Length: 259
Image (cartoon, rainbow, N blue to C red):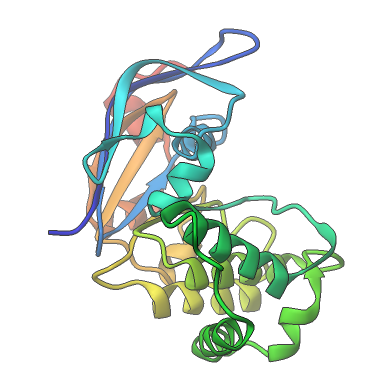
């Protein structure tokens, strides 16, 4: 029995203003499943991603998030990561002076230290073998590991760096927050192929997107539509195709959602 991320009647406000963003979200994602969360801009999709990883800019006012049987809301962001959650950011930040390899080794060591305070961390030879293996799996040039994280990276390179982090940290559930944002078709295909190589029985994926095009490459079994902080429609891959053809207006009319 794999891990599951269970979101139950989740209500969320912006911490600073009290503005209501999520208004009763219910969603369950299990290891091995691929879900897509779609919806117009401003519907709350990225807010949900941020709340799942503990962004303090948002306040949970009601509901639960249960991950692998544990109450996620009681956990700090780093604890959530160590428990097996991963978030690929829409806009990854640059960290000048820190190479991709050093960043990933520190992340692995932090996890090992949390599990065993006496741990000396992963040795350099062990880490080198691990990283090279992951880069080979993703068909990435090994020189990428020596570059400063996201410094001077193209949009596609930033997203590939996120996928390499996901491959190295081996989460149970990965959330891709508009990973297709700002990518041309070639970069989108390369990033999607990386995700497809990683997905499987040990990895559940939530693809958050505004457009259907990434779903031509990462094919979900489950598609959900969010409007005004609620999931109002769920279905299979055919739902994404219908949204591509007809837009979101029919969803608005079907559920009597005001402009």
